[in-house]
Length: 319
Image (cartoon, rainbow, N blue to C red; front, top):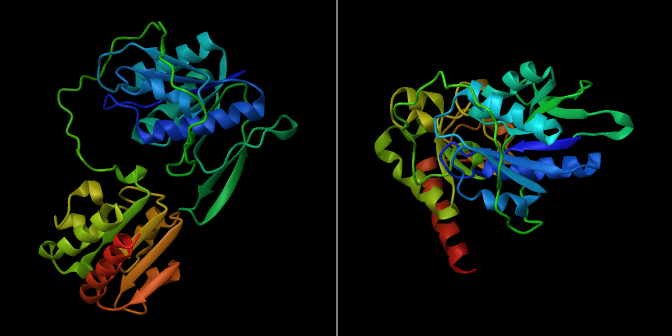
């Protein structure tokens, strides 16, 4: 029983989520006493590095079209059959979310999404832990089916190099004709995708207008963070919608999350409350966000943020 990991590369390059999935798959394979196999579909620059992060074998399935869930499902299901894999691991990305159900149905497999811990395989079980109720609690599921499909939450497992690079082997899989034709793909270049970001600086309506966002971008640049915003800010077009985090936007799990001028409505908290450390800056001491904060500053953000940024610059310069 091998563990197969889908190493995502929808933009033509191996993503951070793929490395996290390989790290998870490698440790799962060790617990099961088997091998970890990484599989890419289509162009995947950097696929030779997958073996550095724990993949015992790396295979590449040729495909030159855009993302089509039926094609990718056929590729991964076919790879699992050819390579003797009973456990399939994917990142909990937009494509991973679209594939997990398809794979589970095709393989008659049990599935768990957004796992936050390695499976417990003692006693022949396969216990997988995930967050529930918008991160307010945890549930553990025992997958009892012969085949198992799991997606892992982003920024949960830090990938570490444990081996050496090796070129992927070609794997021939009969793929169906794509039913989806991608005519154009618009992507944001030069930025770390929010689900992959370990540091995030986010702001809300307390900024009073888009013209004031310079202090947020400057702070983000100082600490090497991605920028984000609350839904009302995206709705009035102060910031692009891909920066909207929360229950109706992007759910994130960064190591450090700055919430600046954001009141902390429950819908926003649902998308960020699994951040490891939350820092809140708000002039309202009764802002709900302070209840979820690890550190809080009560003060005018237009005074606090520039002073914080200068202090951080001095600290970095002294290192």
